[in-house]
Length: 247
Image (cartoon, rainbow, N blue to C red; front, side, top):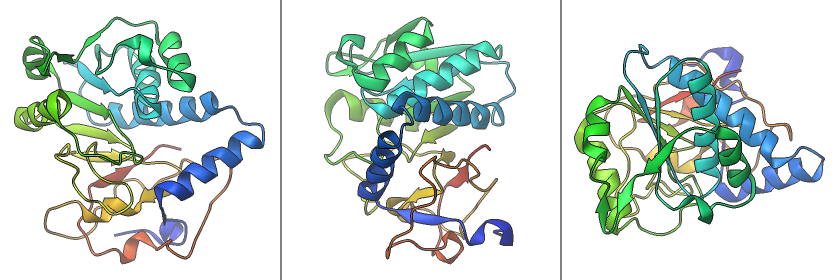
């Protein structure tokens, strides 16, 4: 059950609203890389609660800011003594902006997740070794169906049965309405920010009520943005993945 402490603070934001909040924050003097650092630290803390530390954590990073959160999380996890396997779905030279800066700060070995039209030949063994997969492929801004090698990667992760921690929301879901865009990661848990549970999260499949673990405590520096579409999470007709965030 949701505690009274957090019921009034859990809101839904559309991807457009979240983007606007991010832009306002940067305009007020908070660098985008600082937001990425805070998000990545929260991802790392959530991941640590899901593993024993015996086996590697596989971090799958996309070409945008979701991937940047993954780079930051990988850096903090490695610094904490975890074995981390970082995989990119696009060559590093395609990175730009805050994601490129986060990649530069990571200073960890990395490898390709994809080869040609499919997954990298060593990805299946990497999945077999992994205790957890961090899905930092695509965030709420995804607006086209997954296909080709990226879809093959999502399917390989789902077949593996390895628990997945999704960043923002599971890759392959439309952040506005929860529609599956070609295919989607089946996440064990999702970490989201700004009390910003995306509207699409309410469409995740599976029976049962909303499962809320530790309520979201990460506050976006812009403050809490509500809109006419914002709703108390406790009123959502489950199911949801478990929502996690760290202070």
